[in-house]
Length: 565
Image 1: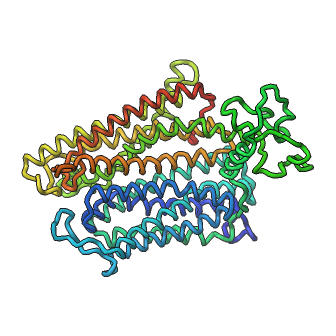
Image 2: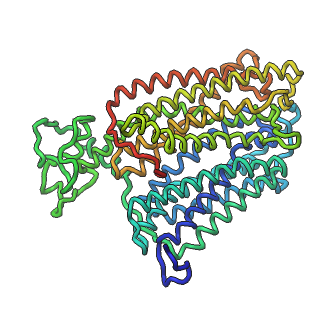
């Protein structure tokens, strides 16, 4: 137990005392940013008069940027600025972005006059108004990249290099567990409390609360600044990958020999690999020693790391290239998870009352997805695995490939359920006379949408978490940062793919003056057919996944169990 308080210890650096500030920084940032996303489609269509397809596309691009920025942030933090400065810049950028978004609701010149998206007399937003809106999204994406790329690793630095020198697997595992618990709780609060505030008190208060939360996030991080361990930046893995590619290209004329000895290749003493593997053999040229006097320094290091690399560097890049096909199979799953904005529009047209005086906010239905993930993980790790292992008499659990494949099936099923629900909802809307009123509430319970959210939660619990474990088990330990970045990169790619699919569907289905499948009038469009298309693409993606599994071969069978075990 740490009995010293933050101020009583002379010149404390790192240790447990800094973790609450680091965890609070990301927890409040997540609470603020996640709370803005569910209802944002309503803000764009109702307050800015945007068509539904355009609004959803903007959110897809924003999501892509937000998920990809942590990859860039991790590279900059590792190679140039360090994690402390990256989180600092991210906190300021996020705060600025949320303040600009809040400004669109309170400052008359920045605020677009209220306009119904289907009105024929709407004025278009001015360039300056859109620039302010898009700038707020951009700053929030940059901020997320700064905080999310470095926060968890910065906390680990405090334990490993701090005054307490707590560099043990148990302590780190406990820290990671509490870190993810705080992020999950933040997301739950966001999609319930903050979304409810936006529904009941309006955009001015609803966007002001996340802004204040982000201010609290930044203040809590900076107040403990004197007590952090701030490690200097060092060479990034991405730089090492670039060096391997450059060296293999420079040495492309060298003939590869299958009879080469260990002395023929550059490797560090005590390294696992003393000879490169035969897969992706062309990369082996990067570690060939042509002239020991010229290629190597007296202490054994490479004289020019862009001309010769170690075997370990080469094998790291090979392992990354090998997992890319299976990584790409998860993109379509993230596409289906990203349809929650359209599900929000559906919910606004359905009966959301659970009591005569209380109705669930349309943006809060994503709570059931998060709740499903939490419940399934708990049941799987604490009940299903122990019971199955006891019955069989040995440790028993689903393999990583089985879990990822099961998630893809749930993903396709979630789109199929959404298509069926939309077919019934649209039919009732037309029967009740809401053909030209997309905001009319039909006599159909919004609880039917739970099927989509529960199936999506199971898809994420099986596939996304399975993918993360797959990366950690298959990639070298030195590539743990890459393993965590791959999931974010997949979500970013999925947002771009979602935008392309939506744009293609809109352009293809409105030709000849027809009503687009993804029309702003949800009752005249055919979102049910759009969801059927996504379900079919998900099934094709499952077939692609099976072929990738076969090509990959057997796993290392060292899957990392949940950190809570």
